[in-house]
Image 1 (cartoon, rainbow, N blue to C red):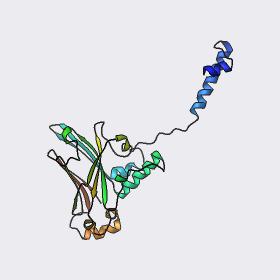
Image 2: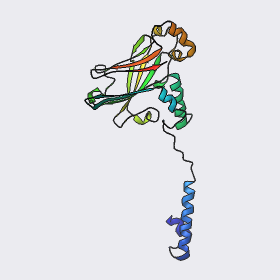
Image 3: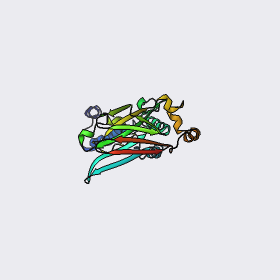
Image 4: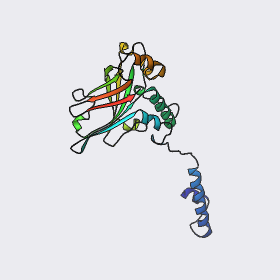
Length: 226
């Protein structure tokens, strides 16, 4: 600004100082008008995302002697939830954005994204099989967790999945179904209406998906109507 001031031969007195102020306002206005800046809606304000996220999310708080011990939110990545996740990634980062493949529904694999808080720090490690046993049940078929991945970079999932506090941790839990359990179908077929009749007729149980998390401290079950 001093350079421009000197080139214009302006002085900080009288009329010249008045012109200097006017020039400063014009210069500042030009700088701000060089870009369009928008702030993306958060996940709960996104009308295309929030209803689907709510549909496929389950939460619980577990207390012991009036003290919060565990706070958990589980998001089942159904085909509908997957499409919403892809759409929100494109909304925030654009059509060329990278998508975490582990979250997507595979032919024989389905994922659950967990927001997990534990007051006993030693129970924070969900991927420690000595502390936690995690399984998924679909139509009488029970599958143990195939992989439990802690997501160290919170900002990677924070725009898409709940994170209840600074001390919470995201986990991606993968469940891989054996071929015989799917009876020639794919995991995504369990969510299609035209497949439900044949699935329900071969099972005495309700057509539900249930996530079970068992530990010495708590036994938790989340269920979704499929």
